[in-house]
Length: 367
Image (cartoon, helix red, strand yellow):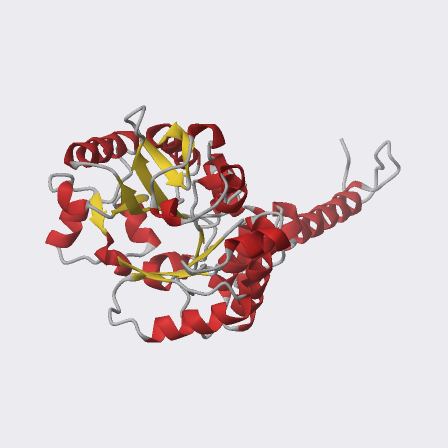
């Protein structure tokens, strides 16, 4: 036992001073750690203990597979879906086209192109759905067709997908089960060779696959709630993390989780010239007559029906080589024009030129 001011401890320190010194050092260390945000694995924040925008942006960039979760609370609670910048992929399912399955009878059937070159020129994505989701893509541009032999529904773009639509959708479901605050838009905008029973069957499959996480169209419209004016917070509250937009919704009248494509507008640049893409998109945007819709900006090259494909195929090995410089143009445009009312931004080969990260990061800029 130590006595005040006289008897020494075995460590040769007089106890009151020793204990006081230790207390001060411990207190300083604790305060230092609490005020250093490296202690929590994030950057320093303001004195009022609120995360600053740069901290939030860093978290979003580090966790692209959960970027919606890491958006600032004022964005998730106040920014409407039509004002949120959402990365999307053009012809999202072309990562798995099957050359052995034969040429598909979709829009591409009018093009004169050797079969062996179709995959090289109709494949617009390298990453599968899970990989696209993990880097931050949240809008999928989908084209479907009834296979003439197997009679099931496949994705299509010149060629058929190797697997059925149902099989691919399970991959999206798995991602959403693992990332509880991410929202995905599935836009079925090109539909070929399907009858009414096919539509009903597919819509039933989607409602089964995404059971418990689809936004109920009927309830929203009955309460005068527009899709474009939803916030992420509201979608989370309603368990509406999957929004299905379907081109033939009138053929599925009893499926209240399937939304009409009247809720969305698509801007196409209609040019094979990368220097005209931005101008053409802006011209189209100025011509929109509906305000309360989602708007997709396709930052891609769109050939005309009379384009000389033979000449292009001689100059470029494949579509990837031809179109990726356009993505670089779009990325620079987004970075330098925070005043443009972007919404859903799409590209080919979305892993190129930091496209996805650029779109997501733009949500932190004043608009």
